Image 1 (cartoon, rainbow, N blue to C red):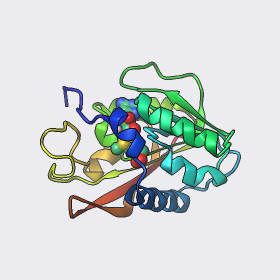
Image 2: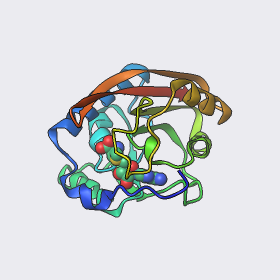
Image 3: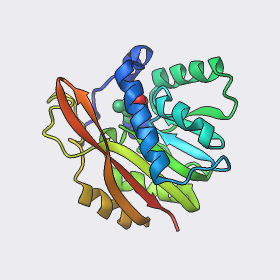
Length: 204
Ligand SMILES: C[S@@+](CC[C@H](N)C(=O)[O-])C[C@H]1O[C@@H](n2cnc3c(N)ncnc32)[C@H](O)[C@@H]1O
C-alpha cells in the first residue's frame, strides 16, 4: 500500500452510475437507515462520494450533506446531478484526508461506501473522521469484507477488503465507542459474489 492505486476514477466518472451500482447504493442506504437513527437535523459528510449515488438515497432523511471526493471527474458528475435535482442542501468538496489537513467543519454523521479499500492509511483516516464528528456523532462505513484480491485484480493496489476484528480495533484506537461491524449486503462482480460489511461507531 505504499504506492498510489491506479484506478482512474476521473475516466470512469461519466459512466459510473449503472444498474448494479444503483442497487448497491440502495442496499447500503437501507442498511445505514437500519443502523443509525437518521434525522433531518443531522449535518452529514459522505467521504469518497463519487457521483453521489448513496447521498441521493439518504438525502430525504438528513439535513445538509457534503459530498467529498478526491477525483475531479467524480466531483463534476456529482455537481451535475445536484444541479439537475436542484438539491440545494447538497454540496461537493475536494477532500483527500491522506493529503489535506482535517477541515474545521464538524458533522453529526460521516458515511462512506466502497472507498475505504482505496485509502492507504485507514487508522489515520479514522482518527480524522473522529475529530470531524460532533460529540454523539455517527460513523457508518460500507466496504468489502476480506477477499482474495480478485475484486480489483493484481494490477490495482488497494486493500483486499478488511477483517472485521481489525476494523473494530482501528475504530477503538481512533477513540470511537460502540463499534460494531455487521453484514450489509453482497455485490456481484466478475461473476463472483463479494460480501459487504457495515461498520458503525459513535463519537462520545
Ligand atoms: C469505488 S469508488 C466509490 C464511489 C461511491 N462511493 C460509490 O460507491 O458509488 C471510490 C471513490 O473514492 C474516491 N477516493 C479514493 N481515494 C480517496 C481519498 N483518499 N480521499 C477521497 N476520496 C477518495 C474515488 O475518487 C472514488 O470516487
